[in-house]
Length: 220
Picture 1: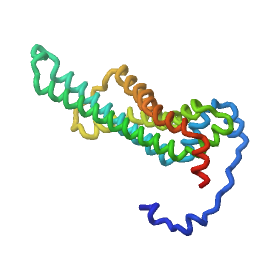
Picture 2: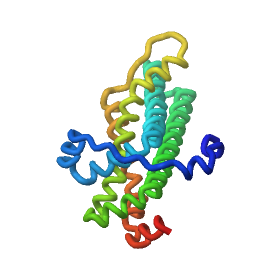
Picture 3: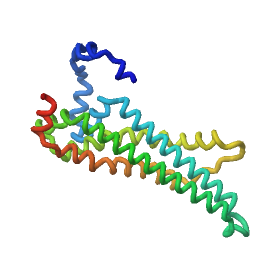
């Protein structure tokens, strides 16, 4: 809606602004690996998209952590004592929470793929220029993946306390039993590894586009 209300004349008459050159940032960028530098540049060019990716991952991790806390509570309350092996309601609840967790993971994966594909389409001209200056398609691919991995890392870290707040917000009284640190570490590391890994294929596809066609499409 905001884009639709923008005046066409004003958008076309908008002049370009010269980039700001800060000596410290230039000196720091000279020491960074090429993929990391490309990833930081892409993330900095579209901060709202990076914030959207981080928020999406934070919501996903918060939901998974909340489900793990609920699962821990169900096991501690219903799977203790002499009748621990016979509790059909608790079994059905665990199955439901597992399905919810899988659905959350699938939605987060699809969202990550669409975000990185939008990044690939948006950065095809700059990626072509970087390749023309000597960067390899592998470095461009790694840079696109790094642009997705940076908000994923922030979102995963924010999702851990977010899951605790989500569970305590819907629970009425009582103590909260946290899952084991191993499970929390698995969720954190799995999110940081799996979601960027899913973006390798679309990033690689975009990085291997024809260099001449990418530059020609931008100028015509």
